[in-house]
Length: 283
Image (cartoon, rainbow, N blue to C red):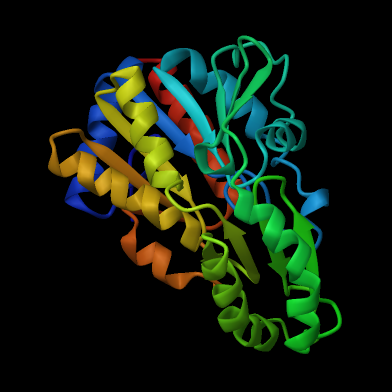
């Protein structure tokens, strides 16, 4: 990773450098897509305690008026991400969009309302069967279920051996998801069962098309962000410059190899966004 004279981290790949240069030349034509957990907020043992990094809102409020759109794209319900991020009612963030449940829900700051698609019937069926499946699988103490509204997740981070619990549950949860028309999405010590046909790549692509953006930047930290990475690759192959940023962690090393720019966690991502806002603010 190189560094420019103003200490703005610079991508290590030609495609990433082209994407950053295009962003700096015309920020008003850019969409910035951001994951929440692990990217704007630190990963914590209890997801209900996750909060955006203390500098995240200020960085986004400084950058948002200078770009076409900022979209937080998350597996969480949109309203939860808004609360945990502290995004509502912030001057400068009037046109922030939060795409929750991988795009099945949308919160717009300008209206303060959430729009949502109907719930997949398989989610209710999985919700009812999941405790029994975990019991039969001999889930370790400390494994627990997170109710996500339009999805259900099983966390193993609190288990005595988180990776062993994760590995033991992967097959039975995949079978449960398949039986009810859902997909299993593995993450950082979490297995999420959710409807098919919605992911961060679809959400990001649709938003880029909706805004007519000429450049796209996306930052994420987990396997669930790979579809968004693939979407940026596709957009680049179709002529739209893009920049892929990884909020790097030892738990998901493969994501950093796909990124144009690897930053060591949410604090570094927020610092990059802050410096980016300063750079385009003085252009």
